[in-house]
Length: 175
Image (cartoon, rainbow, N blue to C red; front, side):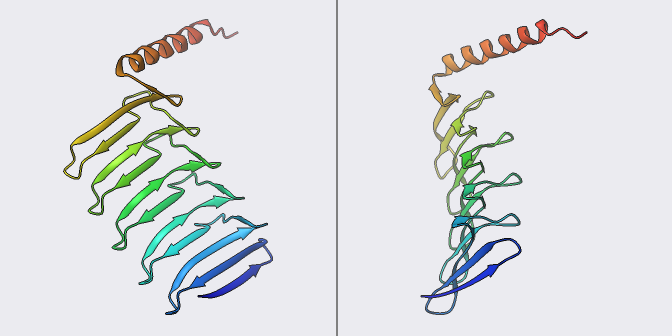
């Protein structure tokens, strides 16, 4: 395996590229102070021997982190997405959808899981669902603040949470 490196003094970033014996790019790593780091794209990219993208990861100062999309993506050799996950400061986190999604090689959704600040969490329904290749649900789980709950307990806690928020807003006094 051949290795090529380049140091960018302006950003204090070291870029290391590893190549297969065939000359095809195997991986590209951007790092600062020994930690994966890149502000304008993925810090780590890996490639299959045929040149197809295998995975890419976004890091800031060694923390898996991306605010405008998934921080980790992995692909099947044909380019179809295998898994993607959203992370902020090295914790799974996404507010507008599941933080982790897995796919079958035909693109069909295999499973997903919602996370908030690193914990499995969803108020509006199942936080985790798994599906067969034909699309039928094989598993569904409720979570709040990292706790796995029955449907009844989830409904009870969500109702209580809404009441507490309503009472809090009723008590707020503006001068």
